[in-house]
Image 1: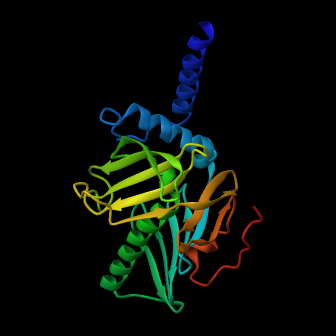
Image 2: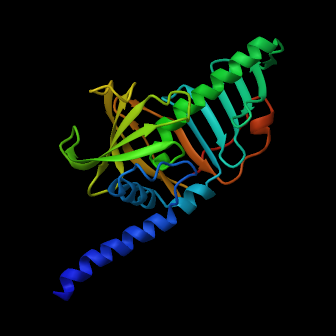
Image 3: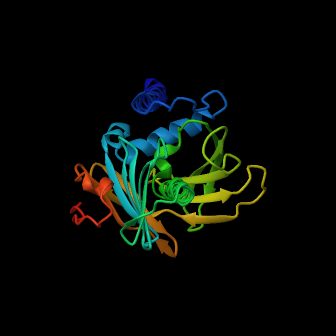
Length: 253
C-alpha cells in the first residue's frame, strides 16, 4: 500500500522539479494550457539539456536546408544572415542594421528596409524550424494535450497542440507536436495555416538529434536537412559587423 502511494508522489516530485527548472516565458497562457501538456514540455526541455543550458547557449549557426545562413547571438539579438550574394547584419530586437550585396553596401533606404524585413522574417521562420521544441512555453502560446497518438513511423507519442495570441507575424497558425514516449524528444510536427483548419498542411519528422555544446538540436526534416548546425561559446565581433565572410571552424561536438 505504501509503495503504491509512493509512486504517484515520486512522479509528482519529478514533475514539480521540471517545472521549477523551466518557468514559462512572460505571457505564456498558463491558465488555458493543459497541466499534462505543460509537464511534457518541461520534460522535453530537460531531455534537450535543460533550461539553464539553453539560456546559457549564446551563439547558434545553421544553414536553413543548406542555403540560407544564420549566425545568431541569442543574448544580444545580433544576426548575420546570408542568402546568395546578400548579407544582412542586423539586430532582431530593433530590426536595425545594414545590407550588403556582393560586398557592397546598399544605400537606398527603401531597399535596405525591405531587405532587413526579409532577413527578420527569414530568421523567424528558420529559427522556429530549428529550435521550436525550446519554445513550447513561449509568450503568447497556449499548450493543449491531444492524447497518445502514433507517429507516421508507428511509435507511441504524446500529441500536443500550440496556438498563439498576439505574438509573431502569423499568430493564426497552429502546430501539432508529437513527443516520443521513450526518448521524450519531439519526433514529428504538423503545421496548420489557421488554427481552425481541420487537417494540417503538412506533417513531417524531427530526426537526427545531436548534442551541440550543452544542448540537443535536430537537423533532419524528412527529405530536407539543415546543415552547418553548431553552437559556439565565443565568436569574433566581425561576424556581426563586417560583410566579408568571416572564417571560423565548426566546433567538434
